Image 1 (cartoon, rainbow, N blue to C red):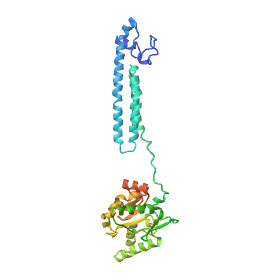
Image 2 (image 1 turned 120 degrees about the vertical axis):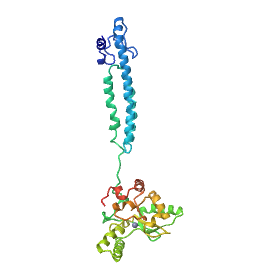
Image 3 (image 1 turned 135 degrees about the vertical axis):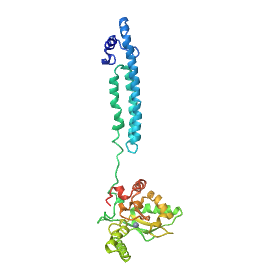
Length: 330
Ligand SMILES: [Zn+2]
């Protein structure tokens, strides 16, 4: 009996109502055509169908509900990755699609299998599939004059040319970084501090003199020539590898402590410069924990101009110039 009643209508194969026996257009709320015998025969199946429709609707609803939660969980897990915003943006789309399906499901009672299978593929797609396209990340522009890398492994370009801007104190810098330098020094002084430039642009000859002088002093201290050369290179850049030759580097000290050693770090001027130099396009070029990468000892007085945009990124990321440029071959 049940078998028969279930099989007779064979509605699972019937689309929304086009093949209804009664033929008349069926409003969604009155699926049962009138007629004595039919009514009796179909009351069972109709009730069953209603029940199935309810089950399907509830099932779909329950099935749908976890979907956004999963998407959110997925987002939460992926939060560190840059894809998160896109995922969460995709979630509303997905849930916006849900009502259509569930309302359709109520109409198309008995087709729960079809409903579920229709719903299923939609769920995983947005949570995982939307991730890859993210805001395209532009790397640093290696041709930017402000980002020229000069270090123990990268010599000053042979044809390097610059126009010097002479400062009042006898120093000189690349004229292109002068306005930002002046602004930084003015701001530091406006805060009641006394910064002093003690080294700026250097010629190749000057760098050679400083380098040879350092070697001589180390030998005088008992170093072998070989050890002296190796050690000198970490303190005074090998000629041709000094940023001072770019005209974009400055050694700045506190008037109240002009020693080029780690005591400089705690002076008021250095504290100010370490906190604010990036705002003017300068970075502390040789941080304490980056010596293995820079090849140069900690120098809490040496600042390098890289431009305001790069300086902000380098400062906020806590990286050194080599890391910023992806040139960590040291
Ligand atoms: Zn320096």
